[in-house]
Length: 146
Ligand SMILES: Cc1cc2nc3c(=O)[nH]c(=O)nc-3n(C[C@H](O)[C@H](O)[C@H](O)COP(=O)(O)OP(=O)(O)OC[C@H]3O[C@@H](n4cnc5c(N)ncnc54)[C@H](O)[C@@H]3O)c2cc1C
Image 1 (cartoon, protein in one colour):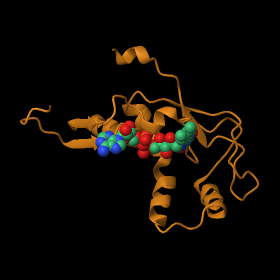
Image 2: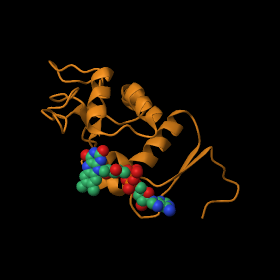
Image 3: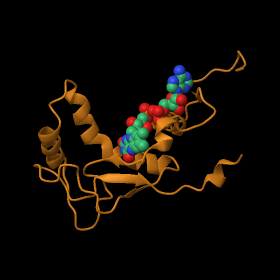
Image 4: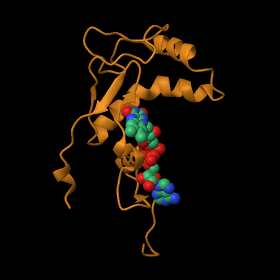
């Protein structure tokens, strides 16, 4: 049980990608973080997933491929109905590349482009032939210790 005198700046519930990213960023910012996970494992659904993330106009676009936020807006507009929270979509597009840069600069997360991975609707306006999808590079689990 947690001693009553312990205090934290941030308490994260759930150790999947969402929670662990929040926790890692908070810790990188110098905050005292507690992660509470209900199972005996770290990872949640994320541990079973392909781990691929879709970040348009990221800095790791494969050589020969180009991309822009304008293209990504066109692609999303032609594949996903205009969301009620359009501001959130705009923030995702505008700051996704920055988020990748932040994670690589401040945590052990390393991402690499998935080769030859076109957007799911490659014929639509703003689609790319590849480069938007990144996956985590292999991590040496020995670092985690027992
Ligand atoms: C086979 C498969 C492949 C996939 N591939 C991809 C992919 O390539 N790219 C992609 O973007 N998405 C993919 N997805 C979807 C993606 O895995 C999920 O959207 C993502 O993992 C959700 O992350 P999360 O952090 O929100 O939740 P989770 O990873 O599920 O983490 C939630 C955590 O919270 C814990 N928890 C829940 N309730 C409590 C509580 N009350 N107290 C404490 N802890 C609690 C859970 O035990 C769990 O560990 C895939 C999914 C599957 C099943």
